[in-house]
Structures are given as C-alpha cells and as structure tokens.
Length: 268
Image (cartoon, rainbow, N blue to C red; front, side):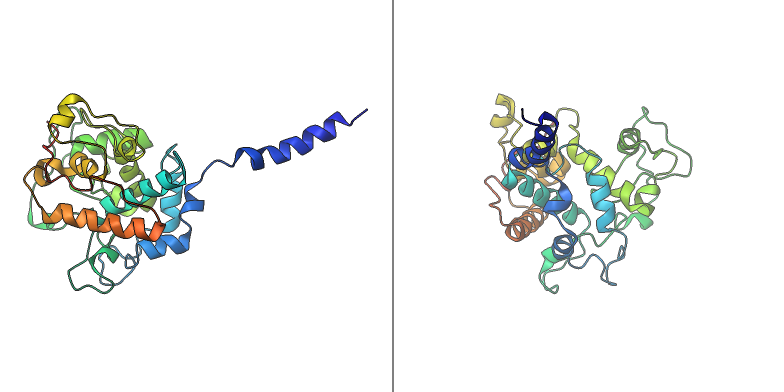
C-alpha cells in the first residue's frame, strides 16, 4: 500500500511548480531594474534625492492586490511601465539636453514645483473638512492634490492625511501608497488607470464618441485630461509618452496603441 501521507507531501511541494507561483512586483522589478528606470532619482541635482527608495516602493506595491501582478507577463510589465511613466512625468527634473535624455530624470521632486509662491491650500471639498494651516498641494509620485484626494487616500491606506498631509512628503512608503491608491481607484465617472492598462475597461458609446479608447492615452486623460487632452499636440502629453516608451523598451514590451490623448475630449 502506498504511503499516502508521503505522496501528499510531494504533491503539495510540486503543485506550485505546475500551477505557477503568484506574481510578485519584486520579481518583475528587482532593485537593479528600479535603479535603471529611475536613473537619476538620487542625483544631488534632484530636490527629492534619496527619498524614493526601492524598499518603500515594494512595500507599497504589495499592499495593493493586483497592482503590477494582473494578467500575463506583458500586461504586468506594461502596467508598471505606465505607472512609472505617469509618475515620472509628475515628478520630472529632466530637460532637453539632460544626461541620458529627459526621460531618465523621473522622481526628481517630492513637492509640487512653485507651490511656495502661492497661498492656495487646495481645500476644494466640504466632504473632507480642512485643517487650519494645512495645505493639500501636490506631493509624492502622483502629486496628490486637493483635500478630497488626501482624505480618500488616507482612509484607504489607514493614515490621517487630512491632519497630516506632509506625511506624503516625509514617509516614502505612504507616498508610494497614495500614488498606487490613485492608480487603482476609479475616480467619479472615470475608470481606474489599472483597469485601463490591463484591458479590463470597455469604453461606452459616449467614450468612443469622445475619442476615448483603450490605451495609454486615456490614462493621461484620467490624470490630467482637463488641461492636457482634446486640443491637439501638447508637450506635457508628449513627455508622458516619452517616459512610457523608454520604460517599455527597458522592460522589453510593446507600448501598444493610442498613446496620446490629443484627440480625446476630457472626461466630464
């Protein structure tokens, strides 16, 4: 008679091999690749040098189920390329003649540039009462802005960002979490960037009539379409596409179609 217990142990050990292990962002983006993608993030010429660490990114990424781990290998890499591209544009320190080109300078800034010269507190929603003396300007990889985004993001990641918005600029794991939260979460009538890049979003008839079709371009529309989309060529859109193409090339994936939002009307 066979040793049933022994056979079960062998089967349990071999099962992950046959079924495949659950994808992990760390296996797709090892620290050496992270350094290659964000080549100058620790350069002394970047005001945010030393802030955006690999360990903080991995810790934040692993706290969102499905981020960078949904679909096949190409889909996973394309999502990570798109995420890094959009956030690199938001934090870029690149310029036309920069070493290794302008798209090697993502993650240079933590705080919104020029905010020191304004007094705007970006308190735009009564649903999340603002704290006197606190300002909800752009911080972190996605440049989280407005009190309602700080409130919702904080609730999702279990941090009080209404009372302490500066946490997004002082705690790199929290900072990455706010960016990934925004990426994974549908906004009002907009799909999530995650659903778009993994092919889960199906545009409505209204979307198609507005030119909003699946592809990287509609993610730009989600993030900043009101300012950048629907009026022909825009340098900001070109910058987002430039980062995306660079990261896709490094990751060895095709960027796909519909990369810009030049002919897409913004989401209402």
